[in-house]
Image 1 (cartoon, rainbow over the protein chains, first blue to last red):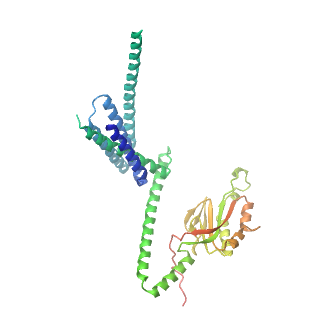
Image 2 (tube, rainbow over the protein chains, first blue to last red; image 1 turned 120 degrees about the vertical axis):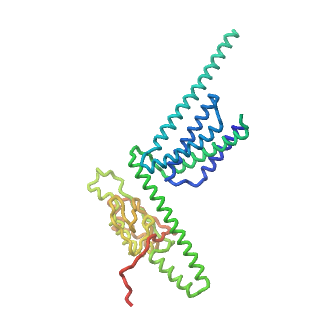
Length: 126
Length: 238
């Protein structure tokens, strides 16, 4: 059920996104930073599932909240003539890499465990 | 812990938002053809230019809309008045002649491109490019051959048009126009095609190695002049 919902959401988003009117160039930098923030939340969510402390409320609010906050910070940065969005990109992408590393480690561990188990079972049969 | 329906709903909505944002952003970036450079100043300048372009396009769209409204109002007001209709026809005839109306008809299309030869091998680099004088001479010959309406890269030639050298581009109607130059003219195609005659100006350009292409066509559309014609000093003598 959850996977079906995700799939439908993705397909609908892609279809509408392909046909939606284009946003003006002025706002595309805001959208870009929002996308980065949202992607960061997604990887954070996967990591929390692995760590078994996933909370939907925190995930959903983080997803939208981070995106909006990133946009607001970018606007503030433009008003102050400081590239705050660079800081946001560094933080978000850095966290994305950390989360990706955790995810990778988890699955590699799992994989090596299953290989070990197979070997021991083969030895026992002999 | 949570209702499964709610979880899937929330995740679905989030996926929807994410993919929508990514798609829109990708299309925007593709459309604006922005190449990221390492130079921050350059990026800012490029963004500024794009922003101005956008504003310009919005304004010209407004103008177009206003013109359409004006046209509608005009049509409404002259509907039941034959004297006004006659006047309207006169106005349209005049607009056609001075270049304030889009026109269509048979004619020719001349494409001029710079010589592709390497600039190091040229005796005089100036001979390799199309100059404002070349455009002027071609226009002159076209008029001599009976062209009724002429445009260069979409810029209509009107009585106040100036064709001026602007460095590596040419200023026509105070708008910047660059290579390749597509000169379109409406008139009798056979007569206009006489521009290709030996020792005609196009022949001379070919001698310099300029790429010249002349095509006849039965369906040439020439846009109207986008600016305004102002006559502040010339007064009619009664």
